[in-house]
Length: 378
Image (tube, rainbow, N blue to C red; front, side, top):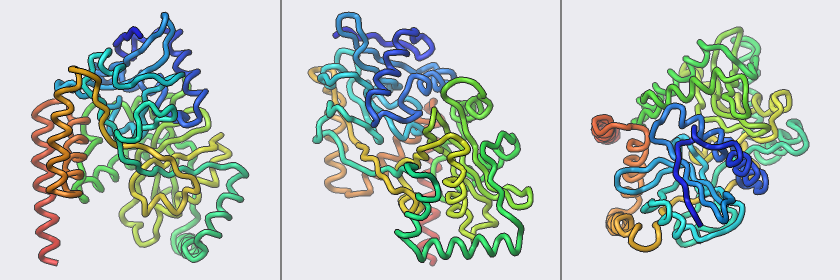
């Protein structure tokens, strides 16, 4: 196979069509995050965005949208916003040899989708992501959720009636194009990240600009979508993310901190599910993580992989050394090493300068110390 590396804005129309056909042929690839449109959206704010295109007899057979670290390690394009990523292909081929041909030492992934089995079971651990998929309409779906946890939903109904009695009716905005509401949802999320000691992935210019570009987009297959919940005009909760066709993938889930006693985030999701048909949505893909929040609403699961695929031959030697060091550290440090690695990768993904990465790690250490101190005092 031949391979070509280019910036997403340089994709030719024929390659975009081929990429879309591969997406359409595999239901597992059905996500706004795995197509050429997302790669181009990230490319508009990241000069280091790249797409590797593998060709056989001049015909494109695979695409990998990525960023390349100086170490030769490739990361999925738009990480950590790319909760799902893949080497999108129309037919299986040797992925290790393909990485070597592209000059990539390894691909480090945390949300791998691999329906063709090109990565092999030994390259990753498997996690679950949570998917709301309507097949018989929202009423049937919500009834299935109630049957699964009647006590939980009875409590949500009680809280909803309490809100309406004390504060006013709950109104869903779908879609909501209010700039002030968008800014507030982002602000609430950043406050939550600071409060919980997580890295602020919304602070860097590229993530902020990407979300704003998508929020104002009104044309094209890939657009931002904000869904809000208000009480008497007051914003109390919202989601923002990307949609393509009938599939929605929210990135930001925010609630008014003053509404915490009402479980407003859970009530929001019930309202959002009911609004899906009017939005033309059949899939509300919640992605991985935050199991306690997402699992009660998702009747479907998506299996994704976390790990590293090293390139064949000499190209992958440095990556294999690095992976060996992490495995040795994990053998002695247990789950803590995995958490440290994920934190380091998140910071390195979003912070594009050395200074930003150093500051990010310093904040992470300080936040950990504060939480440990508070726990010991408690």
